[in-house]
Each structure stands twice: as structure tokens, then as C-alpha cells.
Length: 374
Image (cartoon, rainbow, N blue to C red; front, side):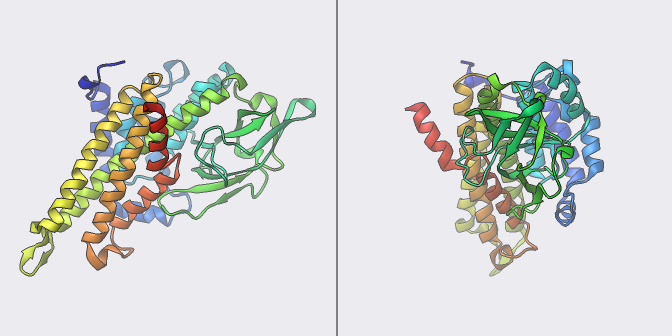
């Protein structure tokens, strides 16, 4: 086990954090966030192209496949700053699809698809189902081998983030009684297979995917022998990046609330001077610092067997609690205005709820931790 007492930013993380903080602040002010909420695509293609030019899409992709050869630890500061600015776009979805190929793809699939993702093609993963319990191996969608080396798919996926913009979709199914992953393209899908969902966080673009009638060549199947391990890896990677987004959002929510408390006056006093508001904000900041410490601890030891899983689940549980608490206090402290659409506090609360529904909420991860630790 690594010496957890020496955790800090690596040089790569510090450099990426600095660049990302500036980029996200300039490219995703709240006015832009609100404008893109009304946009069908939901993100700015020009900003997406800039991310590609900066090399962000290849940060965690090996150099042999067109990436930088770093890891998810270096993706964390990028996603943290995106969450801080509520930045929209398929960055996390594409990163997770790349992780699926790295962990479970054949060499031919890696050579064909990873350079395209590093160059800027968006991708997505389709894991969740209507009866999901957040366990990676709970899969009802099915694949069946047919004539001519074809796979016939059936079932339904939900909460597929960024599927509308994706040029690659990696779908979890059950084949011959075991988990499997299949790579699809938009051309494989019949009309109406993708339908946009209405979700709590309107900065997100989420879709349901109907697999009935989809047939693909059997070479679209990722390595069956590694499918189970790949799903476990994706589950932890998704929670690590969700925790990063939530930590960044928590910081922004606290800053937004403090700005209001320092300027709003009541009974001749700035309301931030009242202890009834001071103490909860201290609690919010303490939770934020704890969650951020857990986040970078998890990034530090993500690839360590056992320790990495524990750290990621701690990070997601801490981030869930910190984000929800900070957003709730922000809404309350803004008074009647806090409950309106015009108040930005509700944007953070919606994002916190969205993340709790993705890959496990705090209670789910604490339950898993109880089994791992005791």
C-alpha cells in the first residue's frame, strides 16, 4: 500500500488543474450554462473541439493508441473544474468508453477506436436499466448468437449520458449467461431506438436505448473473458469521476452562497454575520475539504487492488453528502429567491441529485464499505 500520508498533487495533476480552472471559467460561465440547457445538443461543439486540441480526450489513453499515456488520476482535476463550472459535454462519457476499451477491448478494437476517441470522437457507455440496483453485473439486456456470425440484441438501457452525440456506444448485455460488452455505432440503431429522457439535471443529455432489433457482427463483442472485470473497473471509474464533478460543484456552491451572505443585508446587518448562517457554512466547507481529500486519495490509489475500491467508495459517499448539504443550505439561505428558477442554487442541487442516481448514492457505497472494511 502506498503511504497515504504523502498524498498530494503530482506535477501533471497540478498543471492540468491550473489549465482546466482557467479554461472552464472562460468557456462555461453560468450564462452559457443556462443557454445550453435550452439547446438540443446541450453542449458547444467548438468547446469540445478545443478540449481535443488541448489533449484532454487522450489524457488516460496509452500513447500507443494516440493518447498521453497518463491515467484517471490526471483526469480527476479536469472533471473537478468542469463540475465547478457546471460545464456540459460528453467528456466523462467518452473517457469511460475509452476505459472500457482499454480494460476489455481486443487489440484490434483498441487500434481502431481509441485513436478516434483521443482525436475527438464522442462516445458513451450504456449500463443502467429500468430495474438497476447499481451493481455492475445486474444486466437484463441480452445478446444471442445467430446465423452468419451475427449477434442479436434485446432489452432496454436508461440514463445513457450523451448518447445523442456519441459515435461509439458500449453496451452491457448478457450473453450465454455471462456479462458481455458490445460496441455499437449510430448506424447500427433503428429509427427511434434512442429517445431523449427528461432528467432532474437539465445541463445533462440523457437517453434511453432500445436494443430490440439491433444486430451486429460478432467481432463487435469486447473480450468476453474480461467483461466482468471491465464492468467492475467502469463502475469504480465512473464513481471516481462523479466524485470529482461533485467536489468541484460543492466548491462553486459554497462560493456562490458566500457571495450572497456577504452582500445581502437584513435589519441593518449583513446576513453572513449571523451565527445561524455562519455555522452551517463552516460545516459545508469542512465537508467539502473532507470530500476533496477523499477524492485525491482515491485518485492516488485507484489502481491498487482492494485499496482503490475502498477509496473510491469513500470519495463518492463523501462527495454525495457534501454536495447535497451545500446545495440545500444555499437554497435555504437565499430565502424565497432560492426556490426560484432564476437562483443558481437549484442548478447545483439538481446536479447533486443526478449524481446520486448514477452508479450509486452515499447509502449504497456505505453499505459496500461496511462489507469491505468489517
